[in-house]
Length: 289
Ligand code: NDP
Image (cartoon, rainbow, N blue to C red):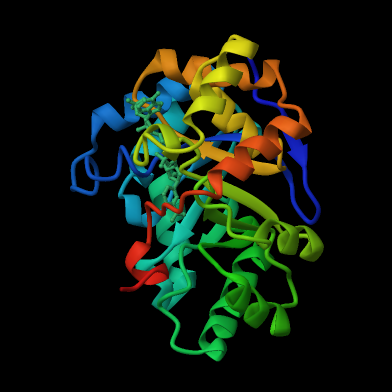
C-alpha cells in the first residue's frame, strides 16, 4: 500500500500532503438521521487504500459516517489527521466542537477550522470567534486551529488580536483560481495553505487553456491528468484535498508520490491557468453580481 508522505509545516503538526474529503460528492447523501452506509464504505475504502488525512465539516452531515469508518478501521488514532469545520454552530463554538467530537467518536481533531468568514459583520466579530477557537485548542479538543475561505482582510483582522496564529487556511485552489499573491502572503505569515477542488479543470471547468499541457505532462510521466493537477498543487506546498467514489481512482491518486513536476512545468500550468477564472464554491459570497 502506497503511503501519502507527510510534511511538517510551520506552526503545525505533520500532515499528509494529500487528503480525502468527505464533503462535495458525499454531503448530500448523509445529513439524514440514519447512517449512510455508502459514505461509511467509501471512507473505509479510502482508509484501506492508504489515506490518513480525512477532511470533514459539520455542514457536510458526514461526521457520523466518518467516525464509524475510523473506528472500524483498526488504524491507530494517532496515525490519522482529521479535520473538522464549524459553520452552522459558529454561534457557540464550544458546543459545536463537543457535538462534532461526539459524532466523530473522537477525543480530539487534528485541525479545527472556521468554515467561512461571511457570517461576520465586523472585524471584532471575527476576532471574538477566533478567541473561541483558541479556547478549543487550549482545551486539547483540537491539536491545531485554522480557517477556511479567508481572504487577506479576514486574516489580517484575526492576526491583530490572535494569541495563536491560524495553522492553515483551506481555500479553493486550482489553475483557474490562483488568488494572485495569496500563497506568497500565507508563506510570509507562516500559515499553511490547504487547497480544495484541485481537479476543477477536469471536472467543473472542462475545456480550458490548461487542457493541452495537462494532457502532455500526463503522457510524459505516465500518470493520469488528475495526478498532474494534484502535483501542480502539491508542488507549490499546498496540502491538497480531493475525493472520489471510485477505488481505482483513489489508488491512482496515490501515484502523486511517484513523480514531481519541474518548476518550469508548474509555471507553464500557472501561466495558462491565469487565462481563465473559475470558482466552484462560495461564488455568491466572493463574486457577487
Ligand atoms: P476535486 O476537485 O478533487 O474533485 C473530486 C471529484 O472529481 C470527485 O467527485 C470525482 O468523481 C471527480 N473526478 C476525479 N477525476 C475525474 C476525472 N478524470 N473526470 C471526471 N471527474 C473526475 O475535489 P472536490 O471539489 O470534490 O473537493 C474535495 C474535498 O475538499 C471535499 O470533499 C471537501 O472535503 C473539501 N472542500 C472544502 C470546501 C470548503 O469550503 N472548505 C469546499 C469544497 C470542498 P468520482 O467519484 O467519479 O471519482
